[in-house]
Length: 184
Image 1 (cartoon, one colour):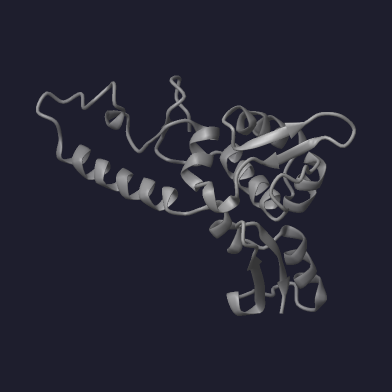
Image 2 (cartoon, rainbow, N blue to C red):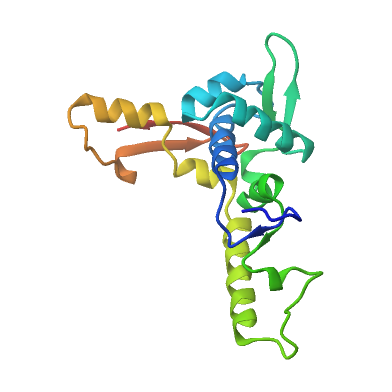
């Protein structure tokens, strides 16, 4: 959670981070630049409207989304989903990521000789950032079923239905936009 300096420590992603990623996944299913009302994104991912609106205002300040005002207003991606990384999203919402306070650039290890744990944590943090920076929004969206499809699949017959990748079709457009997944 963010500390007093806006630094995420312990790398526990907050609800804001989770909802922001889910909202961007829903937005990535549209053609690049298409304006989508926040209500629609919230309905698709079962995210609280007031919370997602505030999160998207921050994402707009960071340049990941743009906003349009007025009765048909909403938000849109400013870049293809394939060009937006999970790390960019999380840091735009959560702030800089550090597993431990000693890994902050301006703080350093409080032990005079350093500690063995600091080096291990630094390596773990670097790998985590590599995973997040190596995963695009488009890739993540391709792994995610919209909440509506999950509910539809569960209501068909068995409330305990589990879906595998072979039971879902996901297409990517040439610009990296995810076409809404469908059940096979």
